[in-house]
Figure 1 (spheres, each protein chain N blue to C red):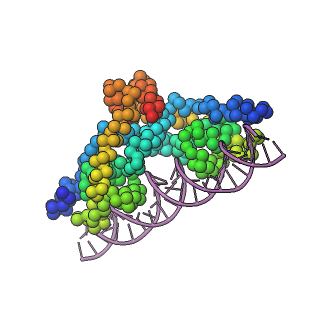
Figure 2: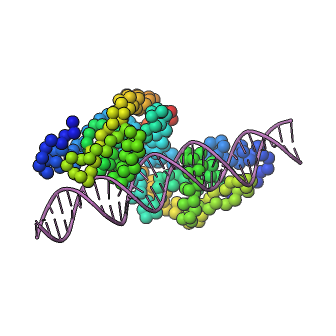
Figure 3: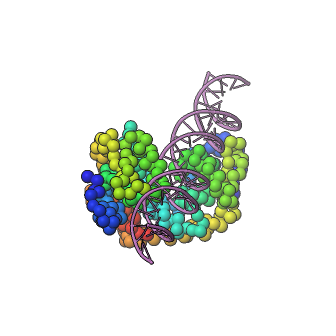
Length: 164
Length: 164
DNA sequence: TTACATTGGTTGTGCATCAAACAAACGCCA
DNA sequence: TGGCGTTTGTTTGATGCACAACCAATGTAA
């Protein structure tokens, strides 16, 4: 069963090592929505990295920065709720953005426990540069879909997100 | 600019804290395919966890286990290439599956550097149980889509994955 | 006002990911 | 047969994310 009865080196690489030929069996995976969703997300993530370089921002960080930009003064917890990540996770996220000089943790005027987050001038400048590039990249991701299909696609994604 | 000119506690929570009302501005995010893709993926991930409990397998681990099941004896590197994760990442992934008794690292008969991975009997039994449940869960994710829409959706996802 | 519940941020743990560097093993070729 | 480049698995260090436990600040109700 372990396909190891041949001898020549060529055979070992070409026929007995299916991985080298990209001929691995995938079983039920290709028919699963989840598998294809995951693959699309991975592809998007990687090309996103490429599109925003040399800024080195992840899609998640981009979302966080957008939310801070659009809602100045919000707290880490509210931000986490909005973008769907845990508030304890948010600590390290903001740590990194703050250490890069993009985000400022100002004391909240109403609540001494929380911070009022805002973009630094550098963060604002970076986002002004980044947003159009991210939008262009996003268009590139669906360039093989007609405008009508693009609308359907986003609609499907939203309906799947809601389907718990 | 920092919306902190009001006074009453009620105001602070109800009007000055948009997060509490779910009324945070989202800026350009909702129109980005990537944002919606990401959200759908998060939703799927969480409901997947729920659907396979108490087995405690992530979508990524499920993919790895399927590939091992369908391609007995493949190496960690080939497996990583197939599922799109780095071979250094694969070390810890297999470590965990092996420590749970699901996967066996057998010595490769041709190559003393590599392992021939296969499922243990426990791993096979678990997958026999898990695969139908994952397929049912997958159907549940798209239950709000008509069969035709489901086909379109998977088609769109594949085209997006290919669009580098 | 005091006691209890809730909230905000932090720390610690664990998982998943990649890049870089390395030793052992392998393959090719002179 | 030997040497050299390549491949495999590993380790280390970094980022990213989740959850539980914790403490301090805040809110609320008796």
